[in-house]
Length: 505
View (cartoon, rainbow, N blue to C red):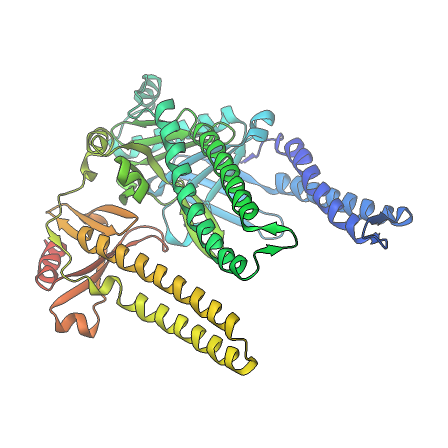
């Protein structure tokens, strides 16, 4: 069996320096004291303590990496890939070529300097949806060669082709099916900036209104008047918008640098990135669904983005223990008028159907949300009322209740507008081979799922919905455990029979 590349060790020797510096700074703060004026004073007699702790951590980090290098192995044979890795907890995996779902190469900017690349191979199992089943750390050239070998073995299984024809196929010049041009990237950055600007403007508007009331009570607070506050708020807003614009443009050019989409008879390949190079390859048969997304800003200007659901493709992050997917992109941005033409070239089976059945009631889109927020703000106002009467702080009580009421009315307006947009947009369409689900209010999406990937249709209708002969459903399809469903809200009862017929035929 093969070991990981030796370049893993010098790469981590450098990376560990950054972690060690962070630890050193954290511990250096513990030996500092404050003088009477609040200035930090370094206790030079104890400087050796953070130095020794940091040095020990640095040595431990790199000892672990050395042991990880010594104990990790991988092998490619005629049947599949074997990978063994881990120091304290040993993990040994074997994955047959026929079960491979996605093959991805990742190489960050520092990894490019040391010529270290990560190859992850995923089977598509929901049990390993958030962790690579096979991980191989090699040089960039070796990883590229391994990807070709894996693809060649998959082609041999699918079409019974020989290695010579596989090599010949690799040497054919591939056409990029989608160009994410500089113009598109600039538009992508501008749309993101506009979205951020509107969100920030709403937040600043609320702050402005609150402080406006306070300044009405006390026009001059320590020489700081309302005009100065307004100018300061406008200045901060413009600076934030400028920073947001700069960062959005940079991210669009850097993150999606040299974005490429290739396809042959069996595989789809998506490559992008400057500082972090991503090379993703997966079989067409492993694609579970696509999502055509439009936020409000994109909808106003006539643009869409398209994501693709394939286990093993896309970053998985953990935010407050809620795992979610990011960057499972197929098309970062294109015009609404051209996305069907692009899909016909890349994934013709996944072109969306025209809506056949629309939602029948607007009530499910706002009912429980209105009840929940009404209870919350009602209790908040009652508590404020009791507090104000008890302490005889009637002015403050009035301001607090008025603020809560304004927030409540704003949220109600948002809920009702979103409900109206959802009512107009939501629906479903299906034929003998696929299903298209329309869902969303301010943020709208169309989910296209092939019939063969649907595993269950769950009726989640409430008692009151059934009395009105309307039903809501969850469509479960083959994907990872967190992203394997789409919701169909409040459609006619007759759709249940059609969906059942759709499933069994």
